[in-house]
Amino acid sequence: MNFTDHLREEHAYLRALADKVGQEKPALAAQLGRHAGDPDVECLIQGAAMLNAGLRQRLEDGFPEVTQGHLARTWPFPLRPIPACGVVNVSAKASTLDAPLTLPAGESLSLLSDGRTQVFQTCHALTLQPLALIDRQLLVTHSHSEIRLTFQYQGPGNTWPTQPLSLFLGDDPQVAATLTLWCEQHQDRPVLQVEGRQWVLETVLSSPRPTADNRILPHEGETTWALQSLAEYLYLPHVNDFLTLDFGPMHSGLTLGNSRTFTVILTFNGEIPLTQAQLASAFMLHCVPVISLAAQKSAPLRLLPGQSVYPLPYADDRWVYAITGVSMLEEPDTLRRGRRVQFQPDSELTPESRYAPDAALALFYTVRVSGDVLGRMQHELVLCNSAGEPLTEPPCRAVVCDLLTTSAHSPTLPLGSPFLLGMAVTDTLDVTTVTRFSTPYPAVVDSHHHWRLMACLSFSPALLNHRETVQRAIDDFCLHARHNLPQVRHIRRAVEGITAVKTEPVNTLMGERLRRGLQMTLTLDDQAFDSPGEAYTFAAALSVFFTHCLTTNSFLLLDVITEPSQRRWALPLARGQRAMM
Image (tube, rainbow, N blue to C red):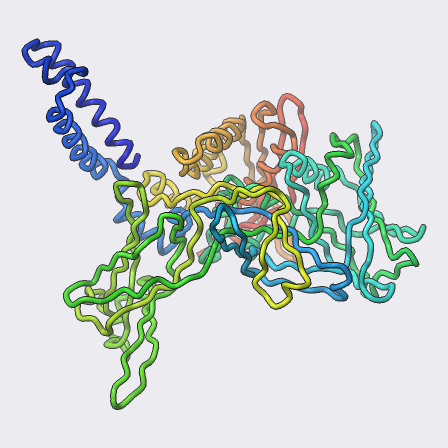
C-alpha cells in the first residue's frame, strides 16, 4: 500500500472513532459528529490521519533498504518501471530497396502523440528483404487445413538469396495464439511452390528459441532472463506473437519465374478454427517490437561540501528506467587539460578496492529510490570513495547522469500512425504502428513481493513438484495490482487454471553424454482461458520460466493436458539456465 491508501484508511478510522465518541457523549456531538461541520476539528482529524499514515507506511513497508540493494545487484527488473510496448511495421517505399537492409536493435523512433514527442527504440534487429506478402488464402476441411502465403520478390534479377523470415501474427491476441498453437503442434512440413514446382521444406514455421539475447526489456546478467521472460509475457502483449520461417539449406538462392512470386503452403492436421477474414492481418513481414525508452542526460548536479546525497530532478511525464552512468568534468589547470572522469557503480566496490593502486582516484555511486506523498518516484544519487565512505569533499563542481527514461503515458493513436526513423535512410522507409501500445507501469520500490521475488533467484527443482508452489511463484509477479487490476485478475485466473502438476526424473542422451532431466505434466482448466491457443502460449511461457529452476546440465520436458477437452501438447526440450556452481 502507498501513502494515499494509508491516509484514506486512517482518515476513515478517525472519522468513525469521532462519530462513536459523539454518540456516547452527546455533549461532544456538536463538535465531533459527522455533520458537525467544525473546520478546526476536521483539520485536526486530517492532520492526525496524515501523521499516522506516514507512521503506518514505515511500519508496514517491505524493508526497501534491504531489498533494493540486493535486487539492484542481482536482478533490477522488479525495481524498474515497465515501459509502453507495441509493434511497428517497417516498409520500403516503392522501388527503393534492392538488397537486404538491417536495422540494428536499439534504433531510435519517435512519434507525436497528444502534443508530446515520444521516443521509442527497437527491441530486436530487423532485416528488411525485397519481398512483399501479396496474398493469403485459407482452405479448411474437416480433416485438413491449408494456409497459402504468396510472396513477391521485388529485388534485382530473378533469384532471391533465401534467408529466414520473421512473421508477425497480427494484432488480435486470440488469432495470434491460435496460429502459434497450430503451427507448433498440428503442422506438417511446409511446401514451397514456384511456378508449378514444389519442394518440401525441412523445417516448420515455429517461434524463435527463447534466449538471453532476444528479450524485450534491457536486462543485466545471464542468469535471470528466464524470470524476466515470464514478466514480459504477462505485461507486454504481442511481443511473443512472432514466428520464423526458415527455408533451410538453399545456398544458391531461390530462382523465380517471370511472375517473380513463390508460395509457401502451411499444412495442418485438422480443422483450424479461423476464418479468411481473421487471416487478413496475420503473417505480416518486417515487423519489430518497440518500447518507450530514450537515452538522455540529466541536468548538472552541483556538488556541495559536506553533502554526498543528491536528489535527481524529475518530470511528471517521464520515469527514470535506469541510471547507466555518472561522470564529471575535471577542471583544467596550468599543468593539464580537463578530462571526463567516470564514477563506477557500487556493484564494482569490493573490500579490496581501497588497496588498489588508483584507490585515491576511484569514485563510486549508488542509487536510492523512494516514493513521495504523491506516489512519484524520487531517485537519489549517493557518492562515495573507494573505502565506501560518503564523498563529502567534492572532487569537482558538478556531475552529470546518463539516464534511460520512459514515458508515463501510453500513446493513444490509431493503427497505421507514422513514426519518424532516426537514421540516414529515413527517406526510403516508412514506419507505422500495427498494434495498440500497452499500458506503462510505474516502478514498485517498496513491496513485500520483493522478498518473494528475491527467493525466485534460488529456485530449485523441488518447486515444480507441487501445484501450490508453482502457483505462488507465478503470482509473485503480480506487482502492479493497484495500477491495472483487470490485467492482474486475468493473470490470476490463468494461475488458478493450473489444476495439477506431476514431475518425475527422466534420462536422455544429449550428444555423447547421458543427462538427467525432469519430465513434467501440467494440467490446465479450459475454463480459465479464452481459447486453447491462450492456454498453449501460457504453458509455453511457463516452460521457459521453469528452466530457471534447473542447472545447465539438465533439461525440462513439459507435457500439457487440458481438461475437460483432454487436449495434449508436448513442448520441445528446454535446457536449464542456472549455473551449476
